[in-house]
Length: 292
Image (cartoon, rainbow, N blue to C red):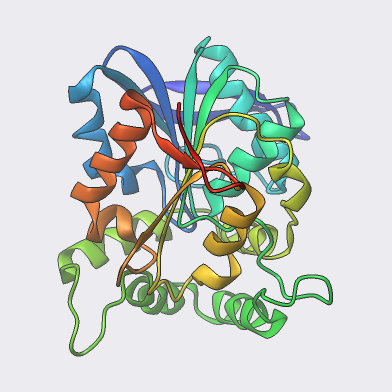
């Protein structure tokens, strides 16, 4: 198995990030969402490398096969971990693709490290620019929603993860966009994560303000969000990210839930490939378009 060292913990033990590295060509780094692991990118890892790309996906600290540290689940540290991946693999001309919580890592890395090594960024169902509702962020999500997540994780993490998985994909009595087998797989992926990491990361993506980070992005950007996302509502995230990055290509998937990497996997793969390889038509504040 392949690991990257991302510093040491308070006891001097190595912090190791597990990763997969498939294909050859310009590199694409996939950053997974909460509370899953890099394995959520199964259908992207099976397709993108077939198109002349080198695709790397890694487990965030505390999740999947990576080291379960006690702390370090703030976005500055997580951006440092992303830098360790890019540096150790010596990647250049990188496209960063962040899903949900991973979109925050993309934004923080771009501001913290000046976009080093990165040529394009993509935000998929991302938590940017700022999820929490505050006086200066009236379209955010009420604190009570995040308090309930914390309470339920502390009460019965297994039950929360199973219930959360259904909302993640828009599963209901009348809608079955994914199979029970897939939900069971996601539960297994989520339950092996550190309890502490699951709690701390939920707090991090709920309370971290990425509005200033987005102002530091000066490379072509793609924003993809489902308008039926009940986990990270588009009004609190995708719409505001698009406003903050007026030159970005913004794609709204009609009727898509949060977990569109699975429910809309073919369309997502096509849109990512078009963005990475062919250039994209982006929106300009004055209403014109430019092809990157």
